[in-house]
Amino acid sequence: MFDREAEWAALTRFAADTRAGATLGVVSGRRRQGKTFLLDALSKAGSGFFFEATEATDAESLMRIGALLGAFTGAPFPPRPADWHEVLDALLALGRREPVTVVIDEFPYLVKANPSLPSVIQAAFGPRRAERVGSQTRLLLCGSAMSFMGRLLSGTAPLRGRAALEMLVQTLDYRLAAQFWGIEDPALAVLLYTVVGGTPAYRDGAAGGRGPASIAEFDAWVVDNVLDRFSPLFREARYLLAEEPDIRDNAVYHSVLAAVAEGNATRGGIAGYLGRKSTDISHHLSVLEDTGLLTREIDAFRPGRSFYRINEPLIAFYHAVMRPEWSRLERQGRAGEVWQASTRRFLGGVVGPRFEQICRDWTLDHAPSSLLVTPPTHVGYGVVNDPQNKTNHEVDIVATGLDPAGARVLLALGEAKWQDQMGLGHLRRLERVRELLTRAGQPGAESAALLCFSGADISPALIQAAADRADVHLIGLDELYGRTD
Image 1 (cartoon, helix red, strand yellow):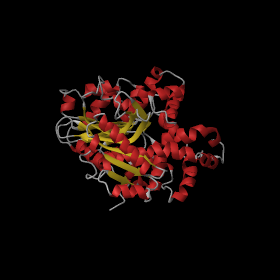
Image 2 (cartoon, rainbow, N blue to C red; image 1 turned 180 degrees about the vertical axis):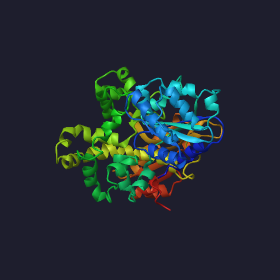
Image 3 (cartoon, helix red, strand yellow; image 1 turned 90 degrees about the horizontal axis):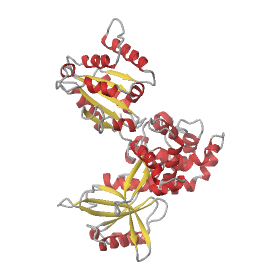
């Protein structure tokens, strides 16, 4: 188990709770994050009951869970439950004497065959129902269909208010991903994270258990493990979309993601890319947000304006590099050609935006406490209008926090460059943005720190300028990955 200590602690607390009354928990997360591994280990540690649903008819699922229950309890003949009411009562009966962990994995498959199942569980877990009150069953429902699992406990859903645990198993962040893959070189770690992100199973289940050993190996590794038509990761991005039950017209959703990957981050830009009206894609954007594939962020300086970014690096990589060349990639021996021709698109359209997000994540989660006057509560992106120079300034990193009175204040402005040398020109632009925000009355602007993030190198002139100032901070790859003393 790698870096799931917090999740494991929460699950074991839930499973070992000795209070009277059966309890319900919900565990979700995208596929291949280790949910099943965690829950299987939990059930085995406590001699619990584990049922993994499959795509099957309701009758077959009832027969399968009945047979497993019979084997679990040592019944001479497998039970033949008539319906899920009987199954739930049997599961509650398992916990009559002591806490018993019960896991139902791939729960969305069961609901697809029997949409009334959440209501059946709601009835079984009625607050004053004798079967629930007299049981210590700890029932965990698990699923990877993010849009479905997100609705399971929301709004007027039957299970709203019934769960004692709600856990989302996240992907590994950029630092943990580097540790998991055993990558020591920060530049290589950024490149690899830009392709495969923080999904644990992509290492052991798809890439043969190893990543590239060096920058020199990176190109060949991508060709062999991602772009080769026989590699497990070749169609993974397509599968991630197809697995979501709310996505029925894959072509439109792929086009929306392609628009974002091409740099069309606003609703209007996405609609223009698709040749549609903004209102025509509202549903598609909402579904992609619900599935966790897209994130909608509010402009830090213009609350009425928002932009979208792709969460999963592999999907961004697929739409920027693979999908435009899909016909060539499907022909044997063309992966190397495609990759060589895609270098500029990869570095500018994939690595650059992902590096900016890494810098935002560092500012929020890993920056030393001495960097800013108060811990940031949000780090995002914003656009500042410069009417005097008739231009707009895009600000890659905008950190905000709360002052002692609880009011939102600006803490820092930052620029991130993956390939270009970071120089005095970048610092001057940040100073101009700070000046414009100060004039506009933005709280905290006059004292905001200026952060210069570089994935390449930093000019001697900027290093000298920063050495003489307390408000300018230079952050390189070693700092981003915690490799400095």
